[in-house]
Amino acid sequence: MATQPLTVGFDLDMTLIDSRPGIKAAYEALSAETGTYIDAELAITRLGPPLEQELAHWFPDERIQAVGDRYRELYPARAIAPTAALPGAGEAVAAVQGLGGRAIVVTAKHEPNAKLHLEHLGIDPDAVIGWLWAEAKAEALREHGAAVYVGDHTGDIRGARAAGALSVAVATGPFGAAELRAAGADVVLSDLTEFPAWLVGYRSGPA
Image 1 (spheres, rainbow, N blue to C red):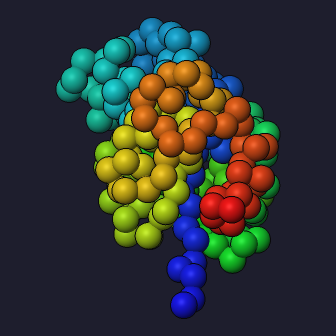
Image 2: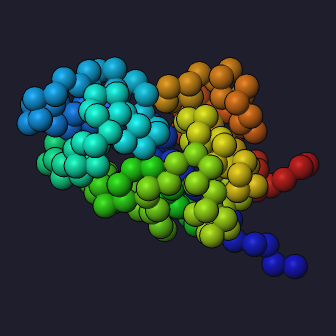
Image 3: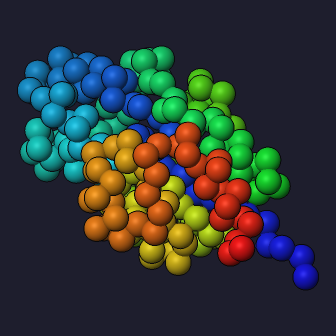
């Protein structure tokens, strides 16, 4: 019987990329333009949820949509160049594709900006789906038939579980390994450098 092609989903911020320097620069530009104080250093410690959740700490509800739109306009010129790939990111995506599988990115980030990051860093997934957070990520994971979802946030674990996918967590974001395990991750890795070897074992199945 033919084996179903493997599809693995990856989160973006703090899973594949360290976007903290770029996001900090974008928040600082937004703060300067709007005259509203934003603690950018604090904001980049809680990446993962949608932008609007962070903006709600600094702006009244009636302004959030407009300032969110402006942030996304400011983002490409300020946030792409300073953002680096996390260790093992490109190799993790390539490991999936090297086994004949599909690697997709499912992120809460504005999709065009997510694609700019990946293009800039030379990471070439098979699909990029934006605007999805936590359990909503299950929509894309199910649509693409993802068996595994890799992320750094407890929201990513919830998304994997909602999709019936194996949750692989990397301790490169705001949560440590113990917190990720407690949140229900099936597998916890220190970072993506450990992913290719794990993937080979996962595909091999029980001995």
